[in-house]
Length: 158
Image (cartoon, rainbow, N blue to C red; front, side, top):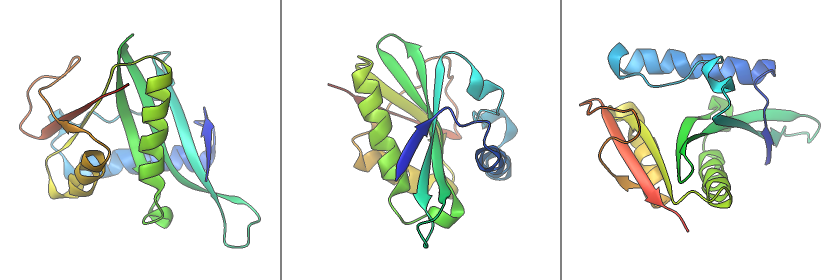
């Protein structure tokens, strides 16, 4: 798997973000959707990565997933836009991306990495993934307010 920074201009990445937003709108109430669109993913406090796998013939790359890291303050980062492409699910993409974000956040000197996800069954796999990577449920952080449709999780780094 190859992880590449700053690929928001790639058509496959743009399609994956659009798919991600559509799924969020199908599974969560509008007031509880905190997913970022393409414009919001290009702000200076965010770094975006995509993950790529070689196809079965080993000829070209296939988009496997994406994730972003938002700096909330010099000691605290937030995971945003974690998504595995449908054709790449079950290949360890999400776990690799979470580990990449933890490594990057640690290298930046963050002492904490947090995220927001949904309470709906749709998000159960994501909540289990984050728990396996050391994230625990926490109160709202940053600009978030308490929301019965959100689960907030955090992990201490370093």
